[in-house]
Image (cartoon, rainbow, N blue to C red; front, side, top):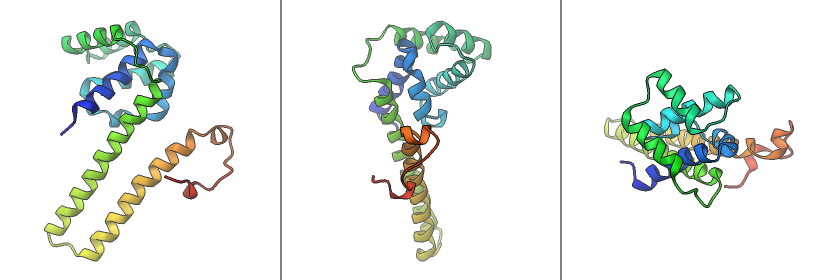
Length: 170
């Protein structure tokens, strides 16, 4: 089940990308479409990625145009997007809400991993193997977080890394 806070954070990212097109690249660096649970947000975020790749702004007009052309613009989504364009701007930068959306995604992913391994135990898999697999899956989730954080560091963007990625603190 998705919390209301998660839905609000997702729509805040979308709203900020529409009302602050100059900041939308920050959200695109932090998030992937899979991190959105709201289907409308997921579709709109895909459009943002397309617009940015084409060098176009992520404003309301371009966004609606692309959604209409792809057949993804429902009446409900159109109304929601127009509301998002009129929303009061969030006090934090879009990167703040993008980080929140990513953290919600990580928690859902960790929950799914735990449930999968719990089911494996219920199905008769051995405890040692299950724990080994669980540890590997959770480490993978943590490594993905560390690598994403490292990619945002300016020294990575400059083409070199002055620290080992595995040694980054949580």
